[in-house]
Image (cartoon, rainbow over all chains, first blue to last red; front, side, top):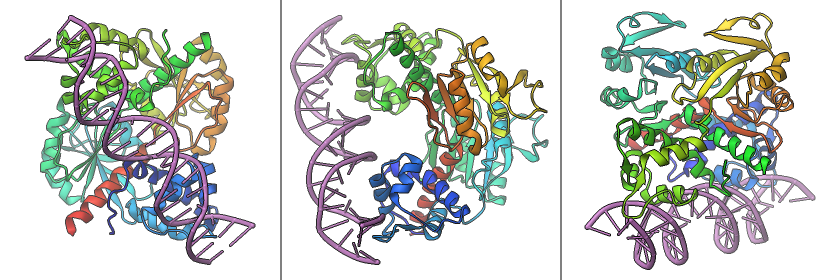
Length: 215
Length: 215
DNA sequence: GACTGTGAAGCCATTCACAGCT
DNA sequence: AGCTGTGAATGGCTTCACAGTC
């Protein structure tokens, strides 16, 4: 795969957004689109879209726009949609079993393939059709199932210890649902998702809005 | 409540992070902290922390630092932790039932109190201890339970229509788990959470890292 | 001496505006 | 004429660096 130097983080975080909409166009049989159309659908400035795309080369044609099929294929590869990716869920508590159920089904190539937990009474059981392995099997399963990425949903206090185990077992990316800041080698990627934080931020805005009203 | 003009979005999104760590200090019986300590724990530059805090007035004392108790109380109020907040879950599919189970238990004052669905066979049932209401009961329940915020987890195609109903029923905030861009009056706050997008962004970084290695 | 609060500088991302291609 | 790709301008956020306070 090509690698692109110095793509802004903000751009990287918009790629899934672009990709999803372009797939939608493809499903509808649309053959081309302009940055202006995409801009209106996604509420992202059209110049931002053109600049984002331009980091990856000249994806469009002047005076024409962008070709749905070729751009969709291009972004698909960027986001790993060209090969099946197994994801493990580490920690099968409330949120963990929730994610097992969720399955990230929006992306075609993503498959939640197994789960891990420390609790002996969970190990060996099948939850929502998925086997639960012992943490001792981490290294083995990561290799056998070619797991590159796991979702981490253990209790906060155990997060760093488990992250260390994951790194040792060769994991390449962690989708971290705990509020613990993880220390990992920089070759391992971490993406933090703080659901309670998102809700609290929303509460903050709602509170501010209510106070504004009352004035 | 006080309102603060023009707090940067970036600051608002860090408030839960700060608050959680300060609660942690409080639990440990610590009585003061400096921006430097917080900086090291959260990996946020200490000047950023001081600037973020300063938007809300002079919260600290020069030469001393910040008082755990008073700052924790202050942020608690900002984030609505001084009163119980009921949250509804709209759409009890995979992700919806997952959130019902998750319960945002990390925040003390947040309580997932009910769920709504369009499917007649779900309505009236109890899931994880929560009653499922019909969408027709939205307005009634929003009033009765003083719901200000709901999590929206319906299929993408229905998201806008349901959002309209929510707005009509008087909801103040929507935690939007669908990839649909919601059109709402600007007095209604929307916070988007795109779990599949987060995972795809992580996949992008992992792919880039792998390509770098191979060079 | 220690630490905050904040002007000023710097950096990253967005947006403008237009040359260049179809 | 229509739309991209991109220098230049702008804006928002972060970081420096230090005066002010305890």
